[in-house]
Image (cartoon, rainbow, N blue to C red; front, side, top):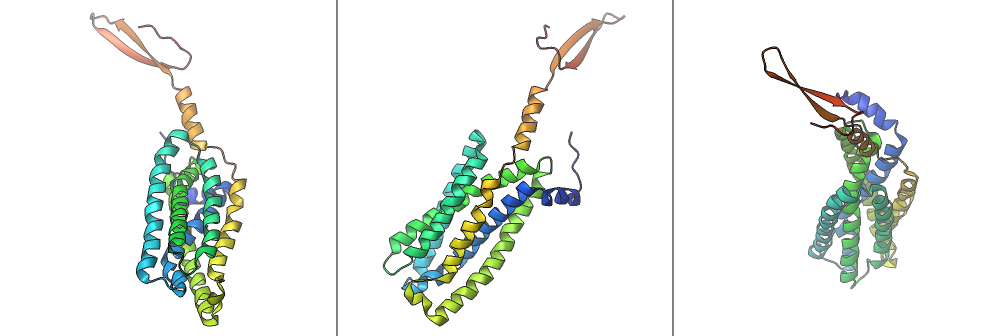
Length: 251
């Protein structure tokens, strides 16, 4: 039975794990941008004539599509275990969606904005359970709660920072009337930062430590041999022997 180690020991192991740090930077960036982006969607679209109600539809589309994506990826990953492949696919797709959003936010582009919002939500949420699972795999035998809580904490921290930065950029854009040219530095900042943050994920090479440990445990599991003896009183004594060398036990 595995003894749970103190949290500060787990914390040290996690922060010295380079593979986990790659995940944390990527996860924090995309979760942070999603939270900040969904909070400022009205500010991004209002200059082009979209109402608060229409902006609410964009935000709702992101969330609903995201829930669908997360609902699909979770059970699928439980079966296939292709965590790294999914992350390395979803990260660039999310980045492309943010880049495309920079160009579709124009007047009379409601359907285009809605579609891109769906893609942003779907790709972003799809990778969430996968990255959390990868965090557990690359830090094993550290307790899952340690890696998961640190990943979520990074997402919330990045979200606060991005929110302040994007709000500042948006205010500067509105005051300079640069938005009239169709250029929004806040959206460009999101797209550019996502491009940079997506690069480290291709250096993620950690094996599936927990799955490998579980596989070894199953392969090393011994067979149970039942040995029945009769004691001096004529009673049967049954003993169970766990052996790794016996392949075929006859009862």
